[in-house]
Image (cartoon, rainbow, N blue to C red; front, side, top):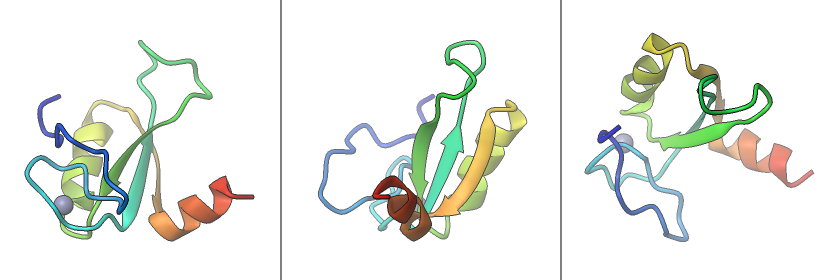
Amino acid sequence: MNILNAETETDTPICSAKGCRAPAVWVLAWNNPKLHTPERRKTWLACEEHREHLSKFLGMRGFLKDVVSLEEWTAAENQ
Ligand SMILES: [Zn+2]
């Protein structure tokens, strides 16, 4: 999957789309049933512009489980 940024280690969450440096607004939660147990969630971050592109990519493969705003996702994680 070479549509993603290689480097993701930053303080500000940045969109996962390759070459994009925009701050992330959305979290795409996904799961590859061939690799992951059903409860497992992998996440990609997306800016407003790439949300559709990235969710289509995952959706076509049947991997996409959920799309939530980063704000909501972080709030849920910190509970
Ligand atoms: Zn982006």
